[in-house]
Image (cartoon, rainbow, N blue to C red; front, side, top):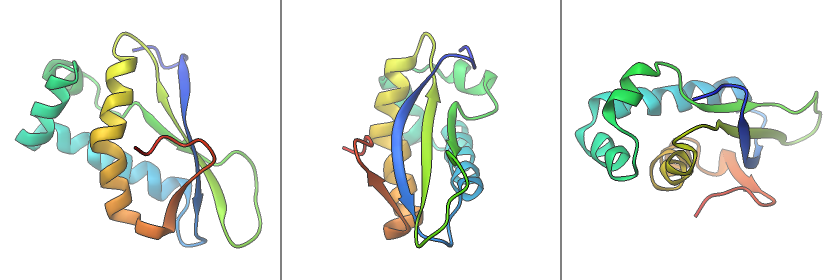
Length: 119
């Protein structure tokens, strides 16, 4: 996958206790679980992401970032995915595995805003 070709998953509102580094760490934890959890590995394979691709790509292709310095009750976190051959499969993986795990981990502290993909 090319790290320069990215597309947005969407914009998320986060409470002050959650920042982009927290979300990025969780994204990496979930990506790492794809290597060890047989159910997640099976799902990734069903979506067209071979185990070898996950093994070869140690860093998650999902990126959490803060668009700019923000003040106030909630901050905005943008999540994007590196494009490439398996871009559509990564989008499906987001919907079926990554977002549910993030939602479970952060709950109401991380909510989709605008057109964020959450299905």
